[in-house]
Amino acid sequence: MEEKDYLKRMKSEVVELLERVKKIKSFIGSDKFNELSEQKQNLLRAQNLAMGAYLNILTERIRVEESE
Image (cartoon, rainbow, N blue to C red; front, side, top):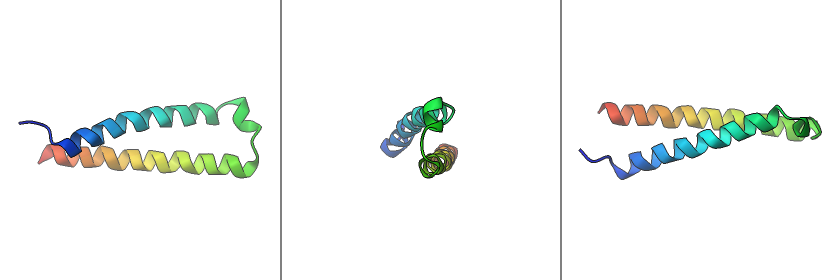
């Protein structure tokens, strides 16, 4: 059976999001991050958490779609 277009898009989005999560985590561990204001650091940490949550949701949606 051919994979549905929306499922392909979700999988593509997961790949892109994984790369973004990798980059933000790397940045958060860098010296450049430590030079930012506390507010900017907090916002980037919050963004990282939100991206992780979104990644988990997308992954679960894919799992559900593939199990049907």
